[in-house]
Image (cartoon, rainbow, N blue to C red; front, side, top):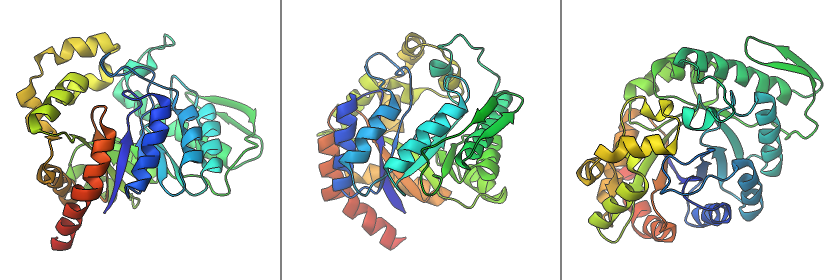
Amino acid sequence: MEFGYALSSEEHRPNDLVRNCRLAEEAGLTFALISDHYHPWVDAQGQSAFVWSVIGGIAHATERIRLGTGVTCPTIRIHPAIVAQAAATSAAMMPGRFFLGVGTGENLNEHILGDKWPVPDERLEMLEEAIEVIRLLWDGGYQTFRGDYYTVEQARLYTLPDEPPPIAVAASKPLAADVAAHSGDALISTAPDASLVQGYRDAGGDGPVYAQITCCWARTEEEGVRTVHETWPNAGLKGDLSQELALPLHFEQAVQLVTEDQIAGLVACGPDPRPFVEQVRKYAEAGFDHVYFHQIGRDQDGFFRFFREELAPALQRELAAA
């Protein structure tokens, strides 16, 4: 199993994201995923930089760590032909180190141009077609595409990497896992759902499977829980709300019923590596082979020390025992 790091564009300024990715590399984390949002989930998070500018900075600040978008929605806010160009440029700047993570997105970010928010099955159809457009343009030469959702007229990407980057598809439900298997090269999810991983494998998916673990290293468990409750209360939301709500204000209204006790039951918090290891164990048992940690709050340096000195050795012992 490989361990990585989540770059939270919603919480950190762009220069801090670049710095944090370099520190993640120095701490021994082998990959990172960077979120691609127009809005944060709630105002307390406070940021939402343009991800493609940040990736350019990371390309020159790091040497080894692999980086993917976690994830980009290439369907409404940004046309897939533009995503194809942005990802090709990123892959050219990070040879062999960049992958494109894609998903069906959230109304929170995709409504901003006044477009209708499609129903779930339509969003999946749009994603499949968008991936087709992206791969076509990565083939090079002049390309024309006329689909149900997108049109490309005699477009050519002149800046291409030596090899096209892998495409990882985010999924939380079976139909999306099928899309990941048929159209993507990897799967991304946020829940230790063994049936989702098995569905991806049964549908022919043979790539890596990535899982994000939300956590908060802190000096005490209480401090960690409080930090998550203040900064990332949306961790307590269930169901489809994260896809359907349109504004940070709506999320702030929805999380008013989320309590610190609920957060404590959902998120590994505090200075003890055991809850973090237990979370990783759940994902390993579900079939995930890449786990990346989303450290909530401002103290990223503390998390990197914790990972290097305590969590990484504990995980090594867990994997050796398994």
